[in-house]
Amino acid sequence: MTQSELDTIEQKQFDIPRLQLVKDLFVFACYTGKGYKDTKNLTTSNIEIRIEGQKWLHCERSKTTMQSDVMLFPTALEIIEKYKEHPVAISRDKLFLSLSDQQLNSYLKEIADVCSIKKNLTFCVGRHTFASTICADNGVSLETCMNALGHSKPQSTLVYYI
Image (cartoon, rainbow, N blue to C red; front, side, top):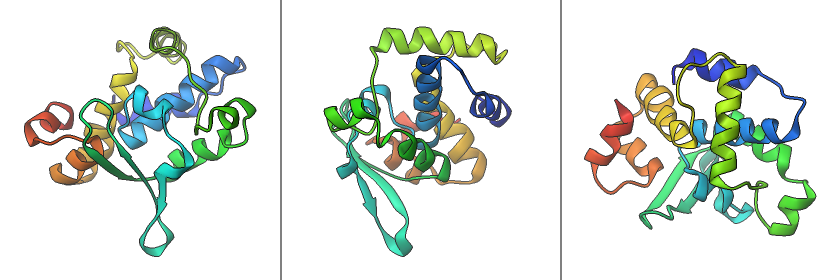
């Protein structure tokens, strides 16, 4: 997605809680590069405070078991804060509530329609947006992006980065 399309989704507020949750999870993916399975399994222990108090997300990618480190942008931190006191998230000991992949992707199509985005919006588009729009368009190195995505080979990252 382009920055303009991401901005459109970010700025849209939904009165329907399920759509707002899906929007927030998707935007989180756009700023962290995390896939849905990894996002729904995140806990507070995945957040580390590093140099100068900067918060980072540190986890193992479920698909590859590669370590993944990504600095948490303010937008991602705001989304974490928004759900940290939610009773369901607390009872599951997770950062977020979760839905099935099928529900999530179905609701993303609804969000795309409401936001007049003509792309086939799926959660995986969030990972691609992170690599291309957040990283590549802002001069983040391929190696840094590769680490954040949890890839072991630059070739894997190039598919997302370009």
